[in-house]
Each structure stands twice: as structure tokens, then as C-alpha cells.
Image (cartoon, rainbow, N blue to C red; front, side, top):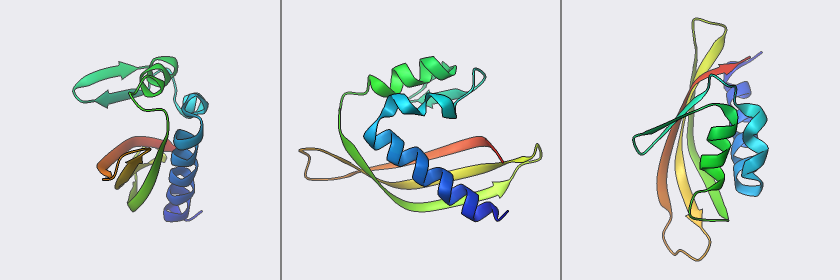
Length: 105
């Protein structure tokens, strides 16, 4: 299994789900998962989805610029993503980056 191909497939799935149905991300998180967003730490699948679905925009489109990954010592991988987030009705895209510290293979 090519780690770069796995990371790319995961990223495509994650962001297409985020853009179409954020509540559908729940099964990609575990109860031990943590999201840090602007200094706030949110733990657990349902709490993370509540945070993501409560963001102050309903529709968006992620345009991925980079996907970097490397194996982790526990049989998973670290994935770092960066790109642009286009909000409906906004002329300029926002820059974003996200790091996943553990994606199980």
C-alpha cells in the first residue's frame, strides 16, 4: 500500500465530505480524537462534529494545494494538508492548513 496514495484518497474523501455534509465526518473521528481550532481543544467524535457543523458558514469548497504524509511509529501516518477555502459569496479564498496526527492504515 503506497502511503502517498492512501493519504491522497483520505484527504479527497475528508474534504469532499466536509464540503457536502460535515455531519458525515463523525465516523472519521474516534472518542480519543482531538481537534484544536483557534486555541480551543475539542475532544471526541460528536464534539468535533458539533464544532465543525457550527462554523459560521454553510457552504464552502476546499481547494487542496499540498498533501504531505509520513509513516508514524504506531502503524498509521501523519498527514499535513494546506490549501484554500472558498466560502460562498466571498470573493477571496481563505488559506488553511490541517494536520492529522494519526490516520490508521
